[in-house]
Amino acid sequence: GSFERRQTDMNRSLETLMQEAAACEKALHAAIERKTGKESHMADLRQRSADLQSQAAGKRTQIEMLSAPDESSGDGSDGSKCLLNDTEAQAAVPGKIMGALAAHLDVAPSYRLALEAALRSWLDAVLVADVESALSILHLLEMKKKGAVRIVALDAPSPRPATPAESGKKLLDYVQCDESIRPVISRLLANVWIADSTDSIPRPIPQDAVYVTPNGSVARGDGCLEFWMRGTRPSNPLSRKHALLDAGGTLEAIEGQARHCAEAMTALSGEIQGLETAIAKAQSDWNAASRSLAQKEGENQVISLEAGEARERLDTVSWELDNLNSQGRSGDAEKETIAKRMVEVRDRREKATADMASQS
Image: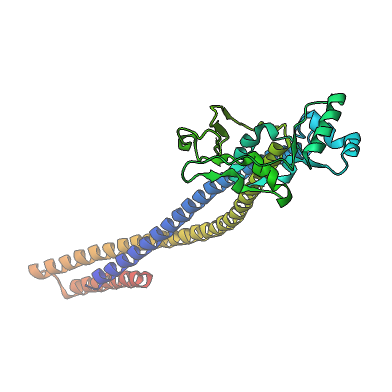
């Protein structure tokens, strides 16, 4: 009947409100979960940023130490430093002392250790214009005895190149220097070849050849082998120069990563703020939906109770009337009273039904 249809409508309305409340709750939990994930990522980024700052500080300290060495660090041997600053030597061979050999060299970053290993004994050498001037300097050094010095003369002849294994790479091809001193570098590295690893060094090694690896291993055809490793505070100018370049490159990479990390943290902070706003709205929506559902459930319970009571009273009055009719003992007045009661009960039932319809 009419009551059953309206009860069905009320149930549908309740189901809709329950679905809306469930959807709001789901959206709230999803936003909270996303915010928790973002905050965890932010914590990781903060730790990463702190680690990068620590690494950068360490590299800056290393660069400062390498850039301002003390008397015991990387300016080369005592004899080399004395020679480069000796006014008497400068006067004895005016214009012939051309500075530290390392100052004239540069090499591809991947072969810095290889070059240091190949030049091993000449890392702190002083470059002099010719052999005659170099001999004059040696004579002066013998008298002063201020320390050991290695000297490379520019005008000496080049050795005969060794024959490499197939597909060999010459270290000289990766070294940059001024063309005026190219003959010196060609002599020092004439027979030096690059091997990618010790496994790729040819067997047997050609007699006059020298093979170096990017990691600092050296193997000579005369059977002499060694491994070169740069110290934390290099004691020669070439190693110090390379250490500065390596540290500078590493610092630049670290600072780039730190900038990227900071940018990611800024973007993530904005996302977290957005999620906080979304969580507040989702919470408000869920609260409103929950209140509407609770109110509707209460109204439905009250109206359903009233309608049920009215139905019971109507059934009772109908039964009484039917019973009187069947017994034939009811007078007209009694029947009229019962009929009025039935009308009242129907009116109350209709009112309850109408209330239910207005709330659905």
